[in-house]
Length: 501
Image (cartoon, rainbow, N blue to C red):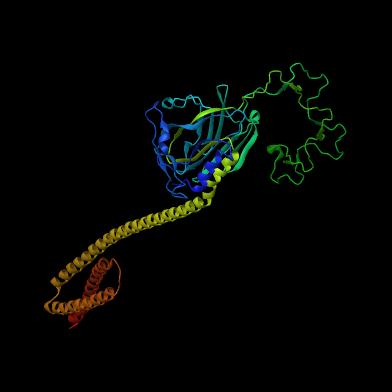
C-alpha cells in the first residue's frame, strides 16, 4: 500500500501534535472508491475509477480518483470522518488535480456540503458551504473557484485566480482563518490573501458617502488644464496664408492671354506657415478635482461573527467535463495548516520532480514519433508525385513514337511509289543498275542501323525500348529517302551517258 510509514506517522500525530483531520483520502486502498456514493438524481453519470494515469511518478502514490468518460456529468459524495463546524477554528481544504487529458473544458473543483445532505439526491442545485478548485473552458474562461455560502447565498471571490492548465499534478489549498482572513495557494505558493469581507462582498460597506453632504459653491471641478494667460504669440509667427503663388513658376511661351485668359502662377505650400497660434496649456491652479461626498461610518454595518463559518459533513464531486482523464487525489480537510503542509509535502511535493522528468521523456518520445510520421507522409507524397510525373512522361513519349512511326511509314511508301514509277520508264539495264544501287543503299542503311543499335544498347534508361524503336524507324525512313534521291540522280546521269552513246 502507498500509505507509507511516514504518512501513517503523520496521521497518528494528527490527533496529538496537530489539530484535527476531518477527512483524508489518498486513494491508496482499492476500496476507497466505495465511499463515494453516486447520486440517484440523474442516470447519465460518468463512471469514476482508481487510476495512476498514463504517466506517473510512483506506482502507488500516483493513484487517484479519475473521471473516466467523455462529455459526462459527475455527481458523487463521500461522508467526512466527523462533521466539521469551523466557528473559532481555522479551516483548510486541500487536494491535488492532474488534467492528464490536456483539458479543453472541464471543472476540477470540490464542493463541501452540509451534514444534512442526502447523497442520493445530490445534484447541481444542492446547497453547499464551500466550492473550491480549478475550472477551465477554453483559453479565456479559466479561474480557481472560491465560493462561500453566506446566509443561503453563494458568493464568488472578487479576484480571478488563474489555475494551472498543463498536464502535471498541482496542489490547491484554501485556508480560511479564524480571524476572518484567508489564503489561496497553488503548489504551496500564495496566489491571493486578505480579509474575507474585502474579497467577498457579503457585508455592507463599513463606510458610506455622507448623504447630507453638498458640494461647496466655490468648488472648482474643471477644467483641469487652462491656457496660460501670460503666454504671447511670437512676433515672427506666421499663421497664414497656408499656400502662396510659386515664385519660380513662369508663364508658358505659348500662353495666349486672349484665348487662355490671364495667367496665374500655381499655388504651393507656404514654407513660413506655422499654423494657428495657441497659447500653451498649464494646470488650472484653482482645480480641485471631481467632488465626492466625505465618507462616514455606515450605520447599517455590523460585524458578523458567523462570516465564513461553515458546517461541513460531506465532500462532493459535482462537475462536467468534455474530455475525461482528470485525476483527483490527496484530499484533506483539517483545521491545522502545519499538518496540511506536511501532508502535502509527503503526498505531492516529494514527487514533483520525478513526474516532470517522466512527462518530459514522454513528450520527447511523442515528438519523435510525430516527426517520423511527418517524414514518412512527406516521402510518400514525393513518391506519388514522382510516379505520376513518370506516367505522364511515358504517355507523351508513346504519342511521340507513334507520330515518328507514321512519318517513317509515309516516307517509305513515298520512296517505294517513286521507285515504281521510275522503273516503268527505265530500260532493263538501268533497272539492273538501280537494283544494285538499291541493294547497296539498303546494305548501307543496314550498317547504319546496326551501328545505331549498338550505340543505343549501351545506354541505360527506363524508356530505352521506346526510344530505340523511334530512332530505328526514323533512320530507316531517312535512309530510304536518301537512297531514293541518290538513285534518281544516278539514273539521270546514266541515262544522259546512254543517250550520248
